[in-house]
Image 1: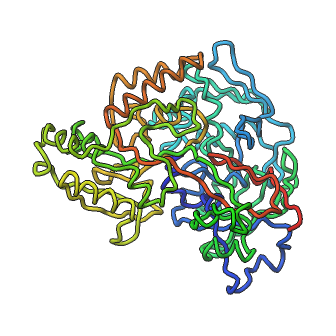
Image 2 (image 1 turned 90 degrees about the vertical axis):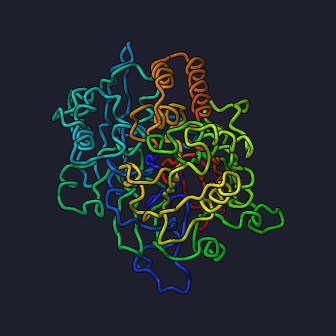
Image 3 (image 1 turned 120 degrees about the vertical axis):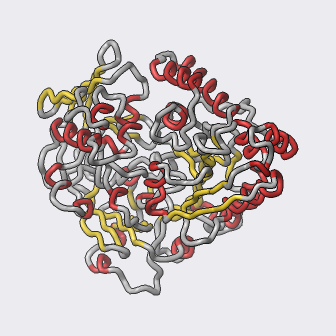
Length: 531
């Protein structure tokens, strides 16, 4: 995630999902003079002006899985699979992981990847100077990470470099999900000489991933070339080209100038009579949208106010009007398809009359007693997004409450969100980094978690989540997380809105494409046939 907040701030590498490309009327990009398009997967997107989003240690998104890699990864079937680590062993008590690096693992410049490179990368991410918003979320199970982040240690005590190809990692308790966390960019390896050379090292990264970033011209294009020495075998597609800020993706897909694109004319492509209907791939993402209540500030320090705002929100109307019906209502935390999801969960219903009663029962005595309320959203200027506008209208109509909307420049929205410099209401959401309910309940709602933006705190919930962390029996773990979800819902910790649906158009000459509900390095599994 968010995570990092994948749902709302995909910022840069979201172009691997929502894709744009240069219009045909534009001059041919420089890379076209050197790279045969029939050998290139052409994608597109934008780029952020925030350099922290390009650094695996500080990105809030899913990272660049073309240029970088880590010890483990997911395959297209979402199985955890060896990556830079060829194998690993776990001690009998479940607290010591010993990773054995591949003998042929290399950086793009040909230098061998060593266990010391991982120790450096993780200690860099945990250093106070990095001020990473993600390191505690993904690496704090490792003994000594918390102390290093707090400035109380110079090294991570739970890391031991046994030899060049062996890294020993000690965690604070046996946690079944620990190795899944190592698929997140914070755990990726970087080259010390590369990252310390200058301020914009990320434009020429010496990574380890399946592709080398060979050209980056801001606001024009990024070009990746298949890594011939990739330790898992050279990718089948020779080039991946990303055009930046270049036009309407759907129209360009129809003219054959883009290979994959997100869809906005969804109804059209769902029609079996549409010629491109068979090129549409859809799926349910492991994402949950929600509105954060800052529970430390009036009026959302009162559970009755939080419940009132939740019960004054009509999810189905919101989905029909704002999303043209193309989303699923979220009454709880876990999205469909995630272990722990339950159709039996009873969320807070849409009930304006009860919402008004709850507002009166609060310590604020009704709408007239509420302080001014500010809603923080990612946006430009004074325009209000359709989603926030729809919610504000419902709260005005059903509760008699007027809110003020403030927009934060999207490139820096995540940093301000984590810094606490936002209103009492905040647009948010979460997409899975790995398929485990811990990635939602514990990461987002445990007291003190950095991703717990609304600073919700419930000691009873914390106790359940802490039990679930170390429970080895799968059935019992899931029961704990379902109990935790019910507590979160009943206490109106946030206002749940939607679970996202994904619609992609994929050219028939692209083979091996598989929709996955969270980001994996799918490009290295694909090939071109007849482009």
